[in-house]
Image (cartoon, rainbow, N blue to C red):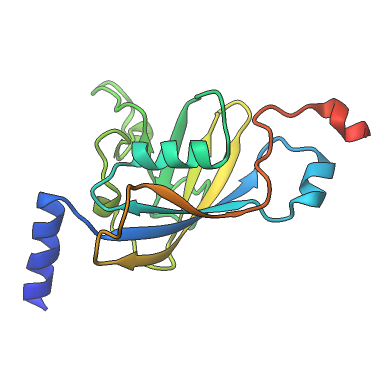
Length: 175
């Protein structure tokens, strides 16, 4: 057991090559009723290595859902799912020492590695994109494999449902 723990710690220091398979579901966002009716489930399965960052995961999600314009975003990890105020927040930038400790994030997405989050299979965490239009996603950890896998990562390995337009056209609702 101690040998296995030491091996995991060494892997994290040298570059965690574990492969994480994540199901990313859109659970809230501006979509017309007709779009939602045609696309009951909207998800993407993404594989990412443990030595890649939350910023890398953001970019994978961004392109997987065919988004066009960048916006602010954050991840919430360790709570009871997306939007849990008790979850650890990982944001674009860390705040300074004058920021209220209650508002300080746990880390920044540019430097936080997926493998450092302590994720286990069946864990769920949140991803909030565009703080104005509020695209909320739930990310489920489906598998964690010891090998790095083949090819380039992160990569989308499955798509369910069409990608919703990033900006809803309410005129389409009448059609």
